[in-house]
Length: 104
Picture 1 (cartoon, rainbow, N blue to C red):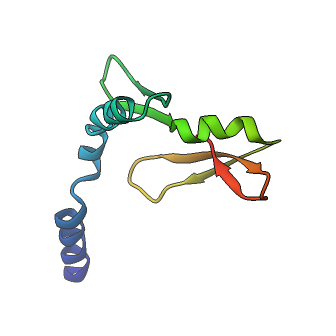
Picture 2: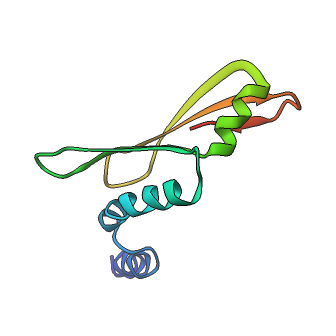
């Protein structure tokens, strides 16, 4: 049990508290908007509780790449290992070189 507490303490020291990371989303999305013209970003949160619900962003490079890739689109989702119920969703398309390009 002591090893578990030491491990958790070290994880908090290295990575910080997981809940605190959600507070950084608005600044991160604003930084993307300020530095990458043409990018898209959205943040969703519950206005009553002020709890984070979802974040989505697509850099302008991937948006511009949409004009030169196949019409095939794939959506993949992954449940994260977290104390919060979260899902990472990725949308990809295939380019002319048969490489996957993440879109969002």
